[in-house]
Image (cartoon, rainbow, N blue to C red; front, side, top):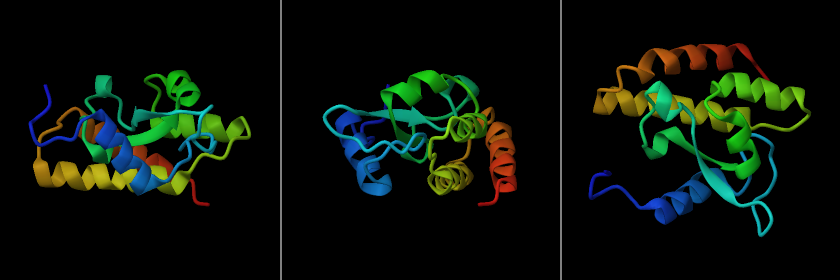
Length: 127
């Protein structure tokens, strides 16, 4: 159950669209009538990732489904290999924002080492 102050799914999606723009973080396709945005957890819930806005990005249904629980940097690399245009900067901003949010709020013991590893891996990929 989410805290009473947490925005509902519709509001979360609107906030993410405002923050990140109207394209899939992984393939770059613009959202519209044929490509609907889905909420993507950067650090998957099964890996300890929280349902906080800092841990969420918008992805198309195809990318969200194909990624599954794969690590974000591994999936970013796969998207690049496929010739798609994943947004490295948006992914990096999200990982850093989540790291800062965990620092402020505390907790997330399982997510911390996973997040640190993914940040190191992504930072090695300089554009």
